[in-house]
Amino acid sequence: MKIFHPGFEHFEFFRNKEVDALHFTLGLVEFAASLAGVFVPIYLWGLGEPLWRILFFYSLISLYFVLATPFFMPVIRRLDDKLLMLASIPFVSIYFFGFNFLPQNPLLFYVLPFFNAISALFFNIGYHIDFSGAADGDSLGREIGARYLVTSLMRLSAPFLGGFIIATSGFFQAFSLSTGLLLLSLLPLFFFKRRPVSPDVSMKSAWFYLKHKELAPFTISGAGHAMETMVGAIVWPIFMFIVVGSIKELGGIISAGLLGGAVITFIIGFAADAGRRRRIITWSGLIIVAVWFLKIFSRTPLTVALNQIANHTAGSSLMVGWSSQYYRLAQALPSAGPFILSRELLYHLTRVPFLALLMFLSVYLSLQTFFFTSFILAGLVSIFYLAANLTHTTAVKETFENARTSRG
Image 1: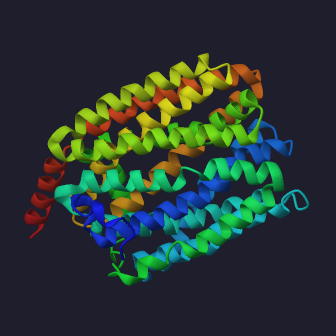
Image 2 (image 1 turned 90 degrees about the horizontal axis):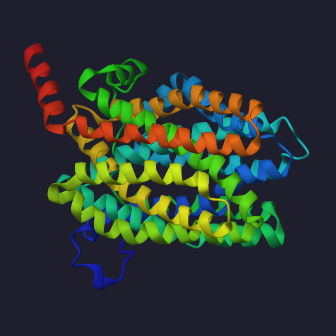
């Protein structure tokens, strides 16, 4: 399947057709999610939900994820990577479509997070297994850079379009359109090889990777990622909406940030393969820390827009280097499946207490103080990204190979 103009064929990272299809699928999923998903906190805010309840809604997603994982483990082991992604689509479709009925059925507030959690469980495990198996280790950074470039370009108009649809026609149309796009997103993947989930994927094996000493720095880095992204996904959009005052303008600002990210990822992927991955993580991580602290001075639509562009540009650069480290570790370990599951559990296990802390702060602090405190906390936990540089793929591979040899 060819989804790029033939003029791009001389770029090495456009030659892996399965990875190209993965980029297209992820881009379409991200487009559908950005069309409506980015506005979910604002939708709940518009329904009159207080901040602590919005944070509680997202904490339920993580709680359901952790509690449901052991029960769905037999299903995960029986499906291959692409079937896992396909199985996720009905759940996320119900999640988006269910918001249309939330005002009339308040109990859906507690039910919809479950569908989001199961969708994330299936899709993320399936996607990461697929990408780690299909990606070329020698050009991993370029392929990840291409992924972020394609997804950013495909998502570029989604927030603006979603904001326009919501402002003119309401949330129902935006949520319904997202549902339809999600159903189309996975079709290209079934033209390529399927990869079974490793039979040793289990809660026990995931816990083994979570507590392994050699992986501890990357685990700490993952915990920081889990917390920082929650402030960026929940608190920051509500703050932007309050400052900007228009959902259409908010969509335009988010799209502008995506454009900045698309430009930078085109370059960073090559740098990651040229041995500069750790330098990218260091400098991008430090910039992200600074950007979060600078958010406390964002008081006008212009400063909010500039901060959003800086945030997404630096964040895209960081994710190319950080994700490259993630997949290199997955490829170096005896089995990628348990490692991938351990990362997904780590993110949600970390988010439950962190969101509980934010809920507590939102109740006892004034609205403005809460926003600025959240931004400072996000800046502080972003420092954990730098710990990823302390995990060395070669050392991890040697440790596991030596352990396997000694057992033999």
